[in-house]
Image 1: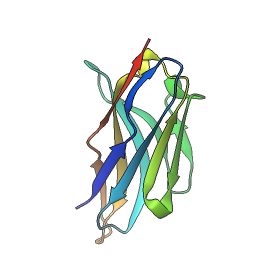
Image 2: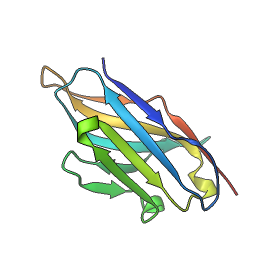
Image 3: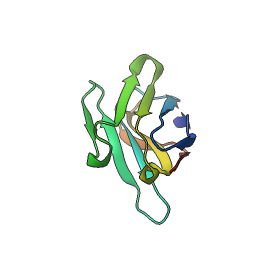
Image 4: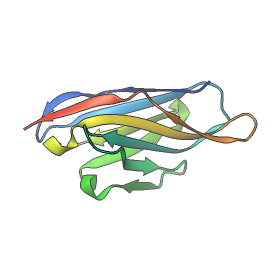
Length: 120
């Protein structure tokens, strides 16, 4: 059983910053891509940022130059540094990881989500 536990959400004023963390635990061979998604009320879940195991990153256009995704492979943790936050960044943020299990099968795991609210 693999668990992803997110932390770091909260309420912040527009222009402020927050840092989200997501730690993976359980039994697996390796973590491949890690990513952050978000879902605002009444909207579909969307990809915010992704980072490969080698550190290559990709971002949604709406967050480029404001958000930074990073990971610590020794801690099985992915981070999302969010700067210059806007009201439209308000959403539940979900961590996602693509893992290789002990049988060399690939699977996708999700965290429970953490609320980010940006007041204007």
